[in-house]
Length: 390
Ligand SMILES: C[S@@+](CC[C@H](N)C(=O)[O-])C[C@H]1O[C@@H](n2cnc3c(N)ncnc32)[C@H](O)[C@@H]1O
Image 1 (cartoon, rainbow, N blue to C red):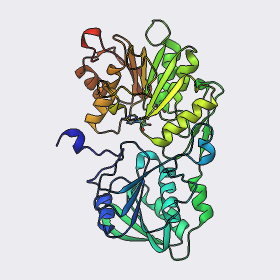
Image 2 (tube, rainbow, N blue to C red):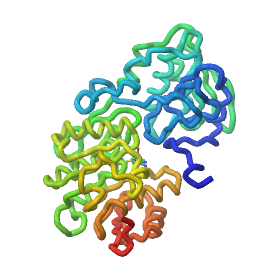
Image 3 (cartoon, rainbow, N blue to C red):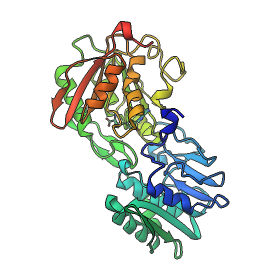
Image 4 (cartoon, helix red, strand yellow):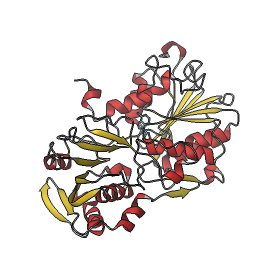
């Protein structure tokens, strides 16, 4: 088994997590179960339905996978409805005897609450909602959320600091509360992005404000430029989230085209919405893709605007997912080498730059000394012509 096969495909999913094992034990493969954005739980099979929000979340165990999409009013601005996808604000049209939630802490408490609400709304009478969570990582608060939604909750098992909470649908769900959790959204602005307002929803990065690391990178690039050369024509934003780096780049260089790539369905959809709202949809192209499936020569993608794969980009901006397993992290941060023209810069922002610099050096990149700003390292990498991977 190679490192990639060995690595969980679902962002944040850990098959060895005691909470995952607790949930897996509760699944009866012969009976239907709803897995709410919690990864490919062992034991799930064709009778399980799994809600997914990431293009990498394939049906690992034969489950039926349903992708996430934005609530209808948000997606109206940018995309036609995906009839197969789940809108958190609308019921799925059927109910389950068992619904499971394994909170993905890095996506935020509001996302876990939304998952619990979705699960509760889809329980049949007498159905059970199970949530396995580490007591010290918000367990008590999610337990309270379950009690508020269904009027009851108990701890059914304990293991290595994890609690398995169970609520039963005996008296119905508090629909008002559940809908409020599912329809939650945020609007934020930041002086670095001018007067614009960006939208966020639970489950995306960065949903409530401009991430501090992204802000540090934007501040540095605003004050110092990117490379001292001419304005870039093509900019690549890997892991664009809701789009702040792409939107900043498109505003700063009015002739530039930006390619924004994002695996998370909700984030990619919101980046599109945010580009439309900023009047930049002509120049900011958002792809809902895993960048690791895009590196040449693997694909010549029709969706990629001309020039991005062939002539190369002039600049990449990346605020990488630092919680990713190390081998995936290394592949992601070296992906710009396949898109940039030789010598063009990729700018990264990270809290600590050790593993980033190691991965970049191994790929043959030339690095400047990291720029240290409070809390962050900004790293510029360039791949010289002789080492260029294309
Ligand atoms: C730290 S966030 C940065 C988001 C955004 N650029 C910002 O600055 O607010 C990293 C993003 O990378 C996305 N991501 C992770 N792995 C990816 C991959 N293989 N391909 C594309 N996007 C990925 C995550 O979903 C997440 O939105």
